[in-house]
Length: 143
Image (cartoon, rainbow, N blue to C red):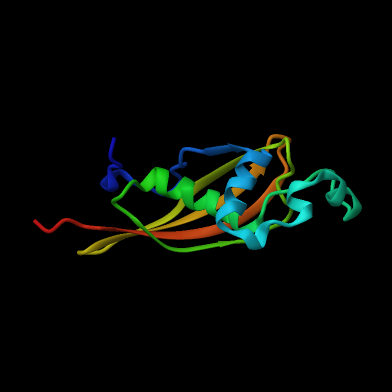
């Protein structure tokens, strides 16, 4: 079902995007991004040696999950203008990531609707992984 752009309002929450922290997801990502085939992403022992409890997600993949959450909400109607996050801690193998967002402002012009959002990722323990902001735009159909 297409998003009703006219109904977007400040305070509206976006549907969450949920992804398990599995080596399978990370290996698939690394297959198309070989620079991310690094021990701490795939091997718990290496991650332990570096001070982490388990292997952990690649930062660009964690960022991409927020893009997926926005795209899932917008459908093909909207376009992401900006997405800025601060990585506070990585998603560890075996944990579940939830990407979420909330509309903080809406500006309607004659030819577009600009939407500002607060976005964030948490794990299944409630730990904040990455807070941030996003701005998306929707075209207004001409009458």
